[in-house]
Image (cartoon, rainbow, N blue to C red; front, top):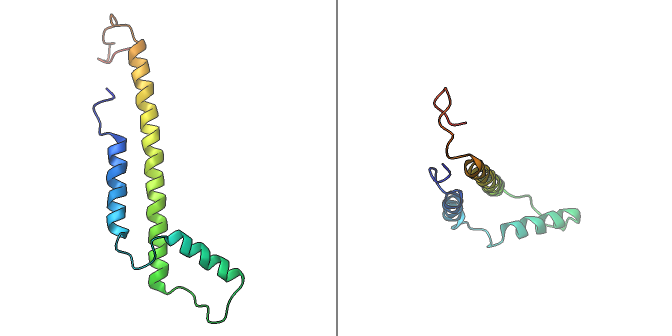
Length: 108
């Protein structure tokens, strides 16, 4: 039963690859989180000539943050699916082989 569905790790790998392709050509630095945290530190002590990010930069930052959170949620989902598969495999292994289908056609 556990081998019928797609592999969660393959799904996550594909999602991460798509996000890398989507955000790979960003004009910002290679470390967008570092850039954001530096900006936050600068806001604590505003310097002359400090400017707020443009609406396009804000959208880009928000999109990146949302995409990162989506990948984290997918990783959580994959872990949950793996745990469910393990439980089902344990239940299947503990079930006696002589046990036939129940009245509704299902085993148990």
